[in-house]
Amino acid sequence: KQGCTSRDWRAPLSQAEQNLPSEGDGGARVVAVLQEAEREAKNESYATRLDVLEWHWPRDAQLVVRLGETESRREAWQGLLAQAFSGPELLDLLGRQAREQVENLKELTV
Image (spheres, rainbow, N blue to C red):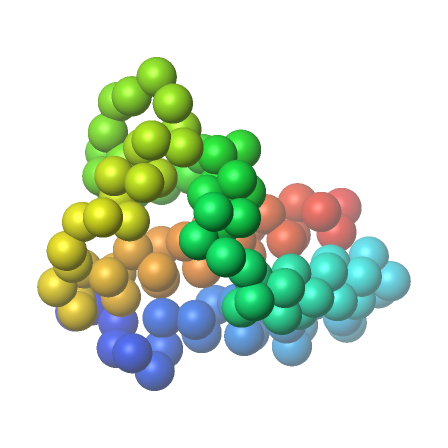
């Protein structure tokens, strides 16, 4: 399997943003929330991002392995963020999180 490129790791989310509004008011609302969250995230400090990530645990097995086992989710995310990733590794992880986010959005429209 070939990894995603810097242009397409976010493709699943972009497609969801286009498709979910056609599923009714719930779809349109979750797309609006996603877009607002992305705007806010662009301006967040590192500490604020860690505060948010402390409450998030991904379902993707590969990312869970990368986070490792610690008593603190915050420490796990700090450790992950401190790692050096190759371009393909980073794009793969971003793509995995984008696909997981699409699953989350679909769950919220039900």
